[in-house]
Length: 506
Ligand SMILES: Nc1ncnc2c1ncn2[C@@H]1O[C@H](COP(=O)(O)OP(=O)(O)OP(=O)(O)O)[C@@H](O)[C@H]1O
Ligand SMILES: [Mg+2]
Ligand SMILES: [Zn+2]
Image 1 (cartoon, rainbow, N blue to C red):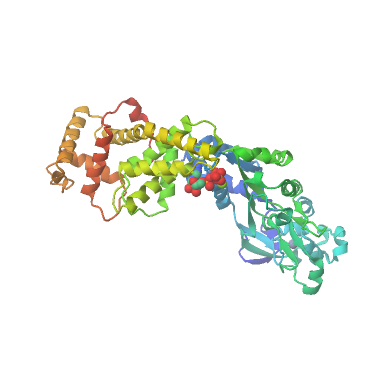
Image 2 (image 1 turned 120 degrees about the horizontal axis):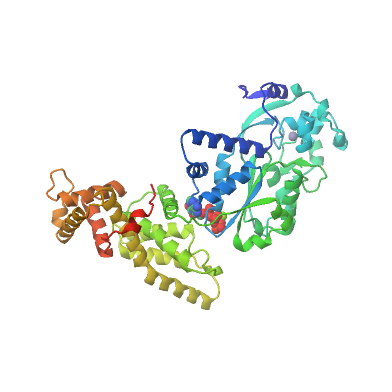
């Protein structure tokens, strides 16, 4: 790597900076990360998840994506709403290496090798401004540009960090995104007057030019009009784009990361879709991975009420149950999404807050679940709305307690396994003492102290305190008692083989 920020083409050659496309940069980055993680002793599933730290997905999905990116493909992430497609696209950008050499003063940050390396020029041509500048040609003579005649010493180079608008462009798919938004516009007459090719009055770079050297993220690609999709197709095929009102071609060399909902897949032009490696981003099959999504989402916020962990697990179980039970109804496709799963928690907390209580109760959770799920019905006519509401309400009254009980059992059995080493008689004794304390809450005060007379209850209490996150305005005695109270009202004190085997989030 070069040390000086300002350099020229010749020093790039001498320091063996290779002429590379964005897909090569990403491939090398992926390979070196994987190697590094492997050296740390991580297993393949962990390595894959580590590459995309903000998006928790099944190993198979991550593997398919990683293979596609290493192969240098453009990708289409498709799947149900709220499965993490947009999140995943952002993770790919996070990973993309952003330090890069550009031609100093070029408005589309040309790769220096495009200027003087004939082979690379064939893959990605220089922009018209650089052609006139380094080839000493007029705009009418651009066809005569010959990279082999340019001395690399004469090409000033700059080391920059790619950022949005300069190596990253994002398009939100909608019918209002027209071809011009992608191509931009070029006005050569203005160049004669102004003289500065980087002036936006001369060149207004569209999204494809902004993405040059980096990534283009297209959210909801199926919502783009056909004409706009065709412009994108041309860029993917030829790595060039012609701005509106001009016949000049600019480099558009990038990796496209597109997303689509299942419903819009049919709206993607076939030749365009053929150029994209399709990756199905579905909901996680593994419970602990779903749980991790909630933990990740909540880690960003602050909690000013206490939400027992059982509710976190419960939100995952109820969402999973919905996914298994609900069919393929368009209006209900968002009800079982990861977004809803997170919403159930934030809504429950909101109810608690609203009532100025400090702990989330069963009732708060039930309300939270109901409103989060009802709120995800996609609006349709009145009759079907009422029907769908009935369906969700019916589902909740039939399943909520059952799923929460699963969560409660998982919790109690975790204690039984990890702390009591599955010692049945001791389990009974602990349970009896906990029940005694619950009946007489005075006993809970100070029960966690070393000199506590409630030694068995204390065992459970320490387990609870070690797991729960609670705000500073609560003391641990209250927390332990309320968690036991919740378990007791769910009646979960039995563990069989299946509970002891479920993998919980670490
Ligand atoms: N697999 C996941 N891992 C981590 N977080 C997730 C995942 N899926 C969803 N989320 C959470 O849900 C939110 C919505 O996810 P995201 O926007 O990525 O979904 P999407 O698949 O793009 O949905 P849509 O199809 O509606 O655009 C994210 O902000 C994130 O908090
Ligand atoms: Mg999205
Ligand atoms: Zn240029």
